[in-house]
Length: 106
Image (cartoon, rainbow, N blue to C red; front, side, top):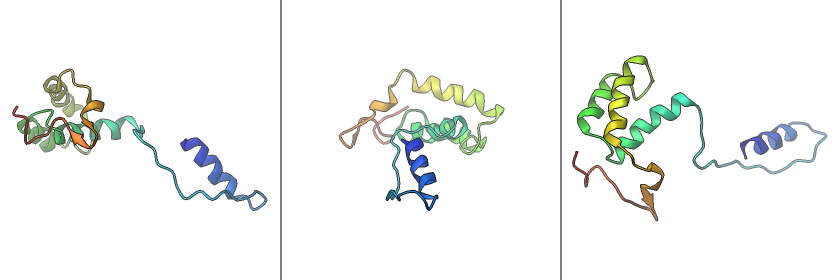
């Protein structure tokens, strides 16, 4: 879909082409890039109570919420160990989260 929107946008730039009214696009569950997705998952997992506040504080102090440097690897590995085998796509259904930081004690 982003490719189609890009093509429409590019076509709209040429005055010889018929204009297609493209207000915008929305991408659900899109992949941006490896660094952004890895960093954003760390915050997502914490917000859903999947790993401990103590580990989150260490990850935050090491700057791993804004970059994915080599010093973050042991902390991120520990995060994944705490998360375990959880299907994160099934955490929220019908606007109701199955897990939350307030209800889960780690």
